[in-house]
Image (cartoon, rainbow, N blue to C red):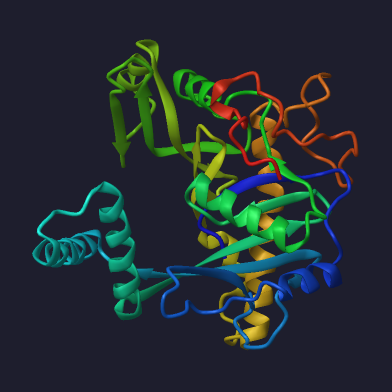
Length: 340
């Protein structure tokens, strides 16, 4: 179900109910790009059934899907057509186009080429956990995740406040401590992949892949000022992932033990398979995320009273959106987050 997760906190008022979300998303259904339209995005059915609901509820967890389509015109093709148009003008007028006219010719070239361009589609899963007030986006980049959240908030007419979730302690500092001491937090183990980056002007990077990390060499890199930016970990021998210094979860993989209960059974129908995948994935991640937050000191308390608890069946309504407050450690800063 998920390959990456960027985690956001939903405001104290929570999210709209299922009916309100469905109505909001319906106004922004996906429509393919027009002939001269470069990009289009909109909501599609998470279950993949045409004309089905745009938000699915499985065990109280809500699933949405945003689809994006782009017409791809290579820059070299645009440049060549722009030069052709400029040469035609020079032949007709005896002078080369100026900077402003060249810019207009570039726009003209793009409009001419768009109807002939191939289209490329991509989809992004969105998961809303109403109980823990979490919004999670399956995107590998922060900018993509932010775009999806902005689209969702706009679709819901601003009725859901969302901010980047910040941890009380910097993930980079915690990862450095785990690597230096060889002692990961309880329930977690360190795998065989990481990235270390220096903070000086050279920005030197050291990457380890399929390599033991409990070595003196790794510890020396940390002692000389290199900071972990990525670290592969496994949670309770059930879920493996890559933690980043920006508190993003990448390369999510559910291990075989998670699916053992389903082995040997008849292949379920499509609807049953979707429900089973959602239930398994969200069930595991609803336990992993609080453990990971605990390992990073809990969620940053924006009221100034210290770290807030990360485990709660009904999260405290004292939580505050974090987009307007700088965290204690630069690695978890959210000052650049869009003000949803």
